Image (cartoon, rainbow, N blue to C red):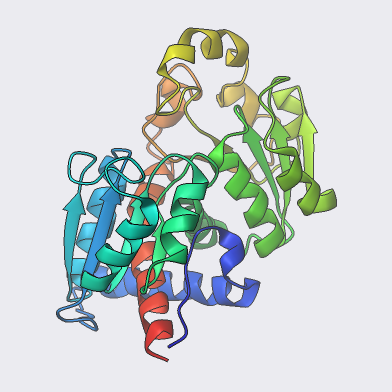
Length: 304
């Protein structure tokens, strides 16, 4: 059995990621055509949530059902990783009863320890450092609307958070350049930036990052667990909004994305969020299809 985990985008090769994207697009087409792909009957997905999320739960639960399996939702009340029971013990026990597991938690070290003791594939559905599943959906969305992202320029606007750090990994794996615009003190982790070399550049002015870009991306200014810093973050990030004025610096056919939930009037304007031509709703839906392709890949690898 070739046990593979998906904790960051670096856990798959560039070729595997490209294949995964094409498979996600194929699965989406089949879903729209009402074709079933019941490959994994009686398979169980364990969903461990330390952080709540609407899109993550629905996309994984619906995805596993569409593949023929079942999903078990474990809320923070049901399991307290590292508090009620050691993470290592949770990994051993939960994996003995499931075929694949997704974990949405805080410190990235928690999911690394969980995966180290799991006997089945583990998927990172978000940690404080990385959000690789969202990147699969974002890249799929770009491919659907603009073709390959290879050689393109992407601008990240705002906090250098887990999404930004996964975009740095994506720049390395999908071969594009990333311009990050953030205030001082809000930079992505220096070690992650360093590994990307000249693929990543940090700016202070959003317009400098947006200039000539093919895609602009942002996220909320205060993520889960940062509620006490919300007022300060609003002040520091006030000039880092994706809006029509900023899009004017990008290429004429540039796209903009947001992983949701969005705060209209903060990190993105209401005008862009509610624009009928936005791809943000495709981006949200693609979590379903990209994660189905990912689960299929990991389950088939585990059988090999």
